[in-house]
Image (cartoon, rainbow, N blue to C red):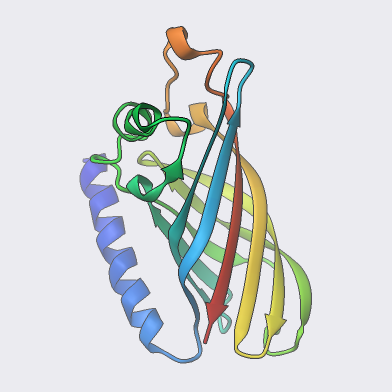
Length: 184
């Protein structure tokens, strides 16, 4: 039942994303970047994707961001990337990670400036949603928004298990950095 709920959520999010992107009052990003780092005692693992998409609706302060799990590149070896996709994030079963919700602060993005905002919403990774508040910096400049954020993801909160044999090679807390430029 949960699988179908997640599938329905993804279909609705995709439809909403497409309809939002046709309206000029929305800010949208076609290729934002997301970088993660696992700094474990025996190994440092880093990977990035420049395939993150997103949108912000300034009228109601809503937002949605999504990235395909199999778009991450980097890692220390091709085998490590394969294990990431097959064993840990199970990208065939859970192809995307997303964060959607509302911006807590009331911000007028038509006014140029740098704003610190808090985004409250559902962070969905590995099929598990967690309510999160994530702090971000937004630079507004006309028809463009530049968004940057850093936060942690705890693997246990998203039912991502680490086998004991590699426990010292994969951190339980993953550092995530996001940068996106959104245009009207």
